[in-house]
Image (cartoon, rainbow, N blue to C red; front, side, top):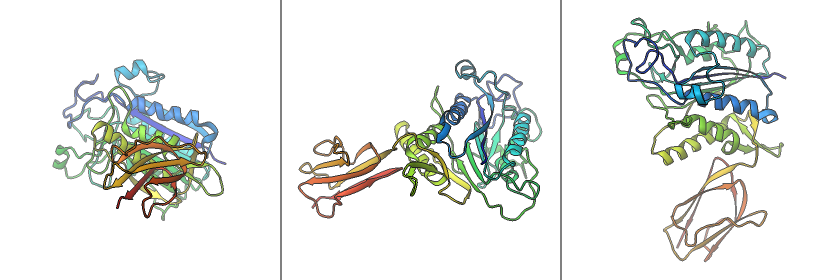
Length: 372
């Protein structure tokens, strides 16, 4: 059985953007320093180390490249000692990572990047390393094309043993700087040679932290919204009860659904509009990633239509525990977070068309009853 090999990159410090420690570059492209990317990358690495036997494929290696902000350098364990996330360091680390992933098709390739990102077309994403924007030449010289990384990790004649499960997490904006429109072409840095081959059969979803043209956000002094939604989905909201296993499992598809719900919740809390987007190859979407640590919690929304003060609701789990609900239901709709499972439903007075037993499953549960 193969192992899980992770390459994790967090770039908060940009040497040549305003506020950086290096010489100011000729253009800022509307970008500056970040404060949460290295912390977010470390949180993902720590999750992998702590997941232990919950992982479907055992953790075999983690490579961590970090360019922390001054605060992260002081407060995030190991951030100051990590190799900086330069273009060259990323190229070397990626080549080593690919070599490990190509040893066994049962392995899992895990890639996470947090930092600045741009796009040239709606179909690509470019990741900016810490030495981005250092000269008057190609502005994307110190940057990496996600399509190049993805293409270079395909099974091929020279690498028939490439990991058939690959998880790609792009925690970055996908904006098009106005000045980029002045160029005929902009070639981002390439890491891999991409071999000509037929359709590569792999389960390789790409989870983007932004839609084309969109932005990814973070909480000052905290972590990115995308990393929060990812970890919440891996631990709680992204599970499904897998037939034949009798336990809650995160699959490549349920992870995405859990992340979308998590981002929506964070948007609501902080007044933001971030969207998670998916790409890549979603073959074998029920492929397990990890067991949940516990029975998951589910975002629940209850609504009476129209609102009615004279209607009482009761939801009771199979252990006989009644969920506390306001009587009458206010606000309406009412939102809460419950443990997944089956619930008995009673309404007073009895309402027509209401199922007496409901199944509350991740990532969310919406219940609505019509009041005559």
